[in-house]
Amino acid sequence: MTELSASDLAARVDASVPIPAATEAELWEWFSRLEPWRLAAVAVEPAMVGLASKWFHPRGQPVCGLIAYPLGAMTTGAKVVQAEQALSDGADELDIAMDLSAFRSGDYGKVVDDLRTVRWLAGDRTVKCIYYSSLLSESEGLEAAALAVEAGITFLKTNPGYGNVTAPEQVAAVRRRFGQEVRVMASGGIRNRAEALSMIASGADRVATSSLVGVLGG
Amino acid sequence: MINSESDLARLIDQTNLNLGATRGQIQEFCEEALPLGFAALCVLPNMVPVASRAAAGSATVVAACISFPLGMDLPSTKAYEAREAQEMGAGEIDMVIHTGRARAADTSYIAREVGTVRRAVPSPHLLKVIIEMPLLSSEQARLAALAAEEGGADLVKTSTGFKPLKIRATTVADVVLLRAALGPRTGIKAAGGIRLLVEVEAMVEAGATRVGTSSGMAIVEEHRRRAG
Image 1: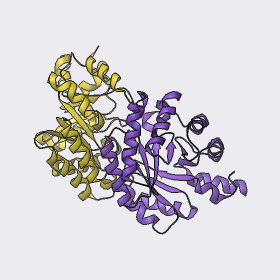
Image 2 (image 1 turned 30 degrees about the vertical axis):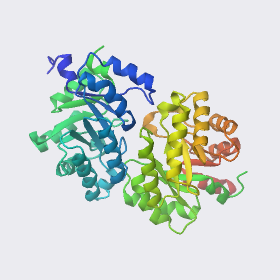
Image 3 (image 1 turned 90 degrees about the vertical axis):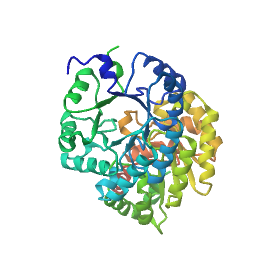
Image 4 (image 1 turned 180 degrees about the horizontal axis):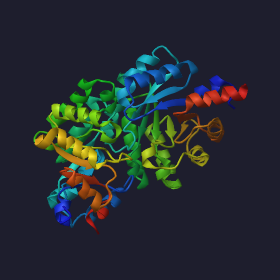
């Protein structure tokens, strides 16, 4: 695994914007710094999808829209409105945050409705479900992941970041439970190449990071 | 200025924006808060139905946090969320502006997005507009506050107080800045890291007309002990 080249690793990375409340000028500048890499996706919030698509689509770089991010605490209707907007603005992929309150309240119907509806809206595009692995026990995490799979989302994203750090064991746990039925993206707290590689060694298909230079090198 | 417990409670938006809070926890949060007579119970959109049912018939209204905490939605999405929250029983909306636009001093964008939400939830529904001052310079904050006022904000709110953003707490200076910038009919909500009675008093002294905190119960308790 240590022999994975920087460009092979880049192809497994979803990059997110490292600047809080970035201005348009800061975004263009950051986008331009991604030029050397072909990443799995560049992940941005809904209001930035149009801008990101304008920059990245001519360069063949997929853009991912973050839905109900980072709290997942929206109604199904609002998640649909957000997803429709992100898709019509050019999102090639969507990451949707699960309604963790509904999950913990035992309302699996709401959890699955959100996910199934957005999965359907996205057609043949990749959709990942953020299931808050770090806030759940292993068995709860697997149960949450199983709801995503039930809703037709077979790409699992462990955490939204924002202080929720993913441990390699969390990746290994979903990989063990679902085998090749799912893809897994490790997200949260990945700051360098060694951490990214340990996620991949544990079974991650992708890693998410806002520390692109740390993970890929300058 | 704050003479009684009910004066104090009427200034406070008692807040629970905990990620993954269960419906039972929100129900309990409301039941415990309602007898104290807070101005509002501030919750995330998916918890508005629970809080609205709990608060029905009381003087305390439910406030829904929209596009929270990042504000990175198009105005049309914010308007949808606000209208839907209102239909589910929210009497007040706390919306987050596009903070990147505020950092770029794009005041016409902010006035427009606030106006879009304002039209979706007309008066007497209260519209509070969060400008995330910890991420703004004084001048950016002043311009954003004026743009929010122009767009129809009833109150300008200092911060989301969203801890994972690792932003500073709201200060008295934030409130002073807003008071100097805004017209007398626009209120100010101080929020972000406020936990103590003295902090509430300092914010109100500086011109805050509301204070948002998840420590409302403890603050009222502190007031009781002091009145003792």
